[in-house]
Length: 185
Length: 237
Image 1 (cartoon, rainbow over the protein chains, first blue to last red):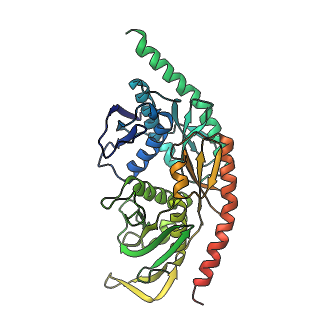
Image 2 (cartoon, each protein chain N blue to C red):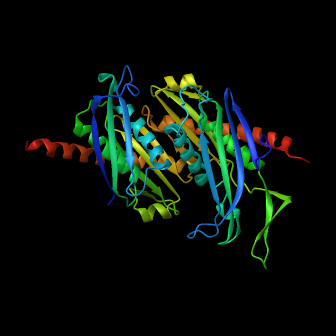
């Protein structure tokens, strides 16, 4: 039920103050459903921006600006990984050159130790810890990690392994979506 | 502490990076939905004097992201229980304003900020407050002071990642600029992970991440010893 609308603009001409001489300047704007963007949105924008910068081949488009705008339509848990998935699909849809795809997976560690993937808002509140990972499509490496609540090292490794397995399903969904988009053109 | 007008303060130097944290305690009414909880409000400032890249004006993205990170560390590690800050449920509670200001930016801001915050909170002496039954007003007794109850001691360790293979602990500003990514691990004294913060950057395998975590846990012990030594030397006998 969590949904995020992503709009990607670029590579377009950048303002002189923002342009980088050798690569594209990526900017991410995250707008919450209600209220003005605050410190939490800024921190998430930084996470998303650096994740996208790691996959987008910015050196192919120097002195340009790529702007990614994300609008939260509804939040029913696992918002950060929804934003990550929206960002990657927007990059795919725009046809930007990418080194790899990435997907966002949220793991919730319940009080009894079981791992729950993509928790709802209720499950997030009851959980002991919530870990969000951005997994890259090349060798399932970790691009981004963010944790809320404390957990032991073994639990983190288990969550990471579960997230890497779940990433396969998300990448398959990307493939199917892109295939559907271009099949009956 | 380092700031005489603050209720608690600490100055931390990690190499050339200098961060000062001042904690001011004020009284406020608790929120309606959590009547027995006080507030802890961290704020990280990167003034233009600390590095050329920061301009004066509204806080930039790095300062805001750092503030959010510190707030998350306080929340995740449960170093201070907000219930301990409550004086009278529903009526009066302490608000701790933690201002973390960077005086010299040479990389590794997050580590230094977490240390400064921990040391400043250990330095805080809160005056005892009594609520007068008849008048309903609060009486603050400045002569009788109590330290804060700090349950956990989180320590942050940052790494700069170069091309998925090389890891450098405690990077300087130059190393950070050249790095392809950064990882920050916050551990507490029981070896539990309070935060794994990897904001994008080049991809890491799970094994490399595990390597970072083991190093962070070892470093935690050394840092904790150092902080205890310094606090003991400052405490008046």
